[in-house]
Length: 38
Image 1: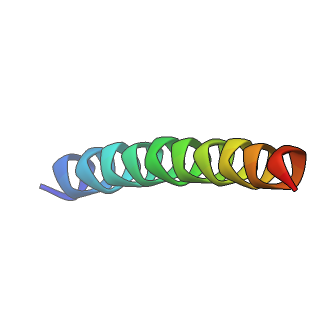
Image 2 (image 1 turned 180 degrees about the vertical axis):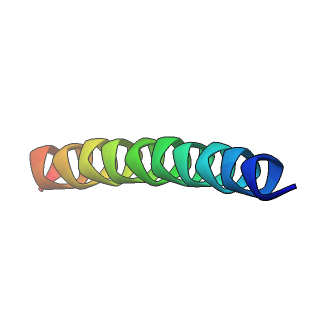
């Protein structure tokens, strides 16, 4: 049971890191586009 919880926690952490990285990259692109238009 503990190994299942650990595996699920690791999966959720990896998913959170992927989503966070995607948001950071998207934010950087938006900021770059805004700075270029000015």
